[in-house]
Length: 119
Image (cartoon, rainbow, N blue to C red; front, side, top):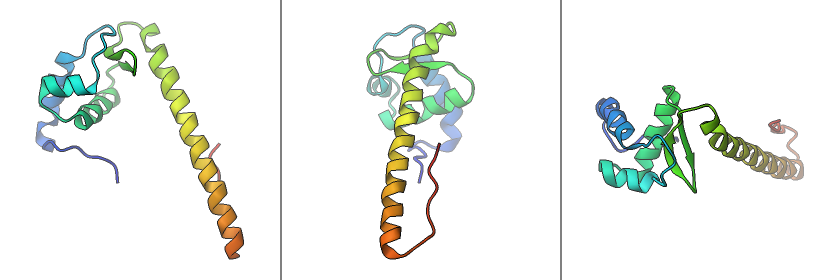
């Protein structure tokens, strides 16, 4: 089950606005723990709200080395998008490895209903 946050749903809009006020417009080593400290939220809730802000169209960048920041140019987003793409590929590779392991077990069990790999 996906994480839904520990804050009240009716407070989400307000919390997004508060969080946006603390995210700089340049890399400044501000991570989720520091944003959580500033806002009084849990770090996990900060990450969830940042994802929701991104879904709303805010160009929020992040790298482990540079923290969060709001992109001012399309170029600002390159590192974040590159790391995200690598993470997606790693997740697909892990999923496919697990599918292959599951299918091997199914063959041993005589089960011919195989799970399909992601491409």
